[in-house]
Length: 256
Ligand code: BTN
Image (cartoon, rainbow, N blue to C red):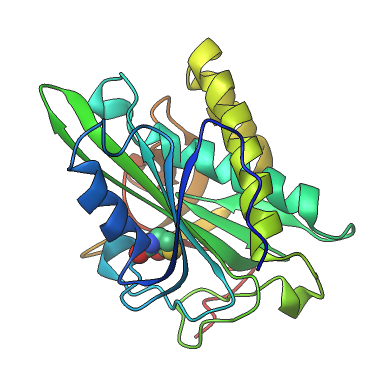
């Protein structure tokens, strides 16, 4: 596999196999800024213990893209989650850049990318803070390039299943450029343009959706995102602000 050509802002660590690129990025982030500066990018060909959101496993055989980016922004910890929206926009634009024409791409709240109404990529943000500012943020992303997970709650797809030939390296190179571009927008203008662009690209706004929380399932209309990225769901009992959960669309089905 060829070596990715990345902008100089990134420090690539390329591994054949690892338990989880997020776990590895966190171990290295904890060694401090000198050892692991902002922009350190861990890339592994496979993961033996890939992790997804809400304690799930992320299927991680060779053939797909598994990466985690260490970020050290000087920002209030409450704003750390904004980076998962920056990551989602970067993945969306990556698919628009390296994918074939005539396919539909959407962002799905909170951190997924859909290709032709099926999940093709997911993001996992982890962070730790002291004194109100993140010590580090690790933004992990997995893209189904060649291999499909078997047992999934939401229908899944891959580049190959959609007939796309794009490789992991092309995907990583394109992501790195789009991520820099959206980070610059965020630095110059804040979260507002990130939120607006995410809303332009998202699936299901204004539609009936189902949101599965830890202990309950809510139904309602996907009204909006608030200014922090929380989902605003219009239910029979009023507007619920949701910060964590899994969204399902009656029009797509559960995939089970
Ligand atoms: C999700 O949709 O649940 C998020 C999935 C995130 C998976 C990626 S793969 C690279 C990085 N390392 C991990 O262990 N998880 C993330």
